[in-house]
Amino acid sequence: MPNALIVVVGRVLLSVIFILGGFHQLMDISGTAAYFETYNLPAPTVLPVLTGILELFGGLAVLIGFQTRIAAYALALYCIATALVAHMGWDDVNQLIHFQKNLAMAGGFLVLAVFGPGAYSLDSRSDRG
Image (cartoon, rainbow, N blue to C red; front, side):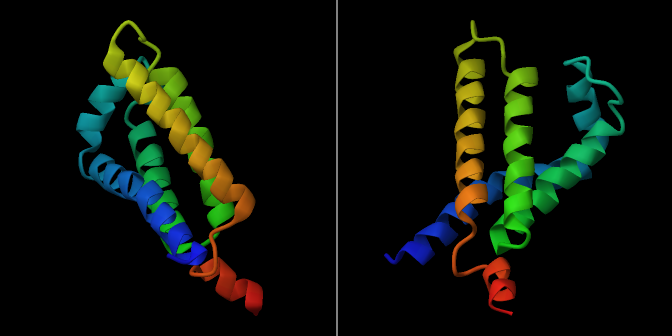
């Protein structure tokens, strides 16, 4: 498989969880707010909207390769913040796994931010301009 296609597959794999998660958060703001309250997060009714928008539109941007570097940096920071806020209870193996998963996704986003979205992206089309 050519490298450009592998980058597309990587973008798809990185973005799907955020597109679906963001959509779910925006469709169930009260449920997400209740979940956020368990972590004593501020503005539990506003934060689900903001994180839902970040996940949905950041994920879509990575998927289609639009403003990829910005979206990838934002999602990397979000993954790290989420790991540090929501997955620090390492006595629970599940929380440790989620912590490590978030850091791994952050690593993938940082690689994407540095090396770019590849040839099959809207960003590459505008670079040719």
